[in-house]
Image (cartoon, rainbow, N blue to C red; front, side):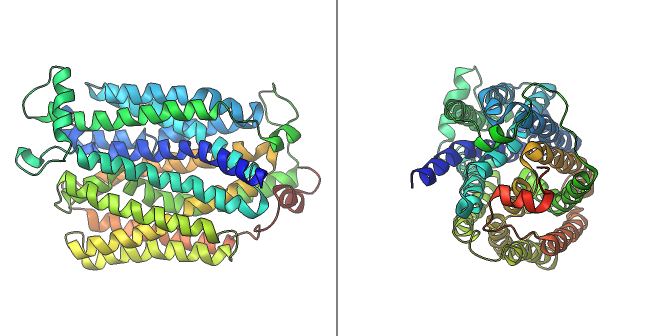
Length: 449
């Protein structure tokens, strides 16, 4: 019982990394139009913000570095220092007065997020009991849903009036008061962007709390048992059969996750912007719709956490991705301008977010590699996935257009990517439920692990 409580406690502490990961993405997304107006940004500028952020390339670079560091120097070493980098990035964003400063903030924050992701998923898996490994991974993903929900609620409450004449958030007077402290008075983009600055300030506060909690974590016992050298900068040699199996595993996991993440990354960063431009919603109502979606994701993830260690994971994966496929079929048939269609899309996309490909990726990636290479392998995959997501984000803004005129073409591409993820994940789903990490590694790699 005590061990169970201990793993849950460490899971919650580590899960704050997911809160801050998703929070950084959605904080940028919810205020994207505000920063665009304030700094007179083009769609191309928005594409670069997405490409270098926690959503894409920034996280990709951080992950490949953080994965190797976590395997070489331990999971705890990451938690001791990485959150300080996150704080610097968030400070750059909330104090930004130019596009280069804003871009630098998104990049630094993204790198920090990437560094923490392989260590967090690995640590949760290694500190979990066999019967709770999927549950604990799901709890960490629940934090990935709670972060956007809180950020979007805050963004809705702080939202400025649309076009200077529309309805404003209940807490917009707070925005005006804070802006006045910095000498910004009167209506306009310079005032409105303080709504986004306050949202990022909330992430800074959570990052401080996360840093204090994660510094108190014990090192992973499995890492201590399998670590052969704390100071070598090069990975240990891998035999040819093992390297082939690891490559095959990399391709499977990266394939199922990449095809899904290309869609999810666009939705994570551009969803509110799409609702406002192609859907014609105000910033406030776009945020409200997204809040409803994230509440569905949290509720579905909770149910997922209760059943993932008890049911056939192959068919659970299939069910989750099918919700995503149906969501985009609906968009293509009903259209983005239909409120009814948007509401049903929000429901379906929320259901798939709770039975998320990312949850299965985090679970299987931490199970299918030996302990000595576990975080590094995840870092490599995360680098590939988020790096290619950055390229797709740059391409998406040009396909989409300034006012959403290319949305139908983009939606067709999204649907095709989700079908690829559905096939790869369903066919290749491993049978690891109910097995210890040591047992899984021994079955796959023999005594070399």
